[in-house]
Amino acid sequence: MFTGLVEITGSVISLEPRGESARLTLNVGAMASELVDGESVAVNGCCLTVTAKDASKQTAYFDLLMQTLKVTSLADLQTGSLVNLERAMAMGARFGGHFVQGHVDATVKILDWSEHGQDHRLEVEIPPEQRGLIIPKGSICLDGISLTAAEVTESTVVCWIIPHTFQVTNLHTKKPGDRLNVEFDMLGKYVRELMRR
Image 1 (cartoon, rainbow, N blue to C red):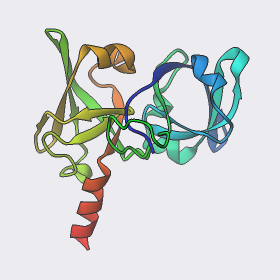
Image 2: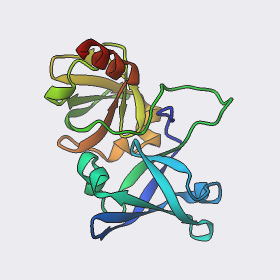
Image 3: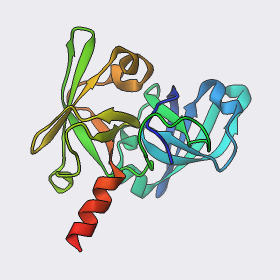
Image 4: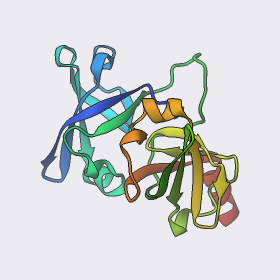
């Protein structure tokens, strides 16, 4: 379980295809010395398992299933791409974002990414099958970042990005047309499923 509060950004060293899977190698900085094999790390909001690490090289390795590559935007990563990183919640720690499982529901396309004074306006398109899972002032997780839905239309959601979030996440590398991983609020998904039944 995660909070959607990005700890650091890492960078992609390589994404190597391995038949029906792939190996993702990241430079995770000093975080490498704290990781243990088998630990869960949210990479752009996708819960991945550390399969190996090398603290001296500040690297961590993750094995990706084909399903992960199909459902998320991780297949778009290239050498040098910045990724948002968050380790799993620690029991007893402050809980600042919202409950994020690291289970990506879909990818969304950036429609608007514009500067407005010191802030930025981020508008993304919501896939038809996922509409109704987000409410005004509700939580949404984009690329592993817990954000508040400031404006919700039938097909889009707008989040306003403060300078701190812009600077410490990978958002400053994004542009209109780019894909982001999205995880909708768990409560909304449970309510929708209960209503269907």
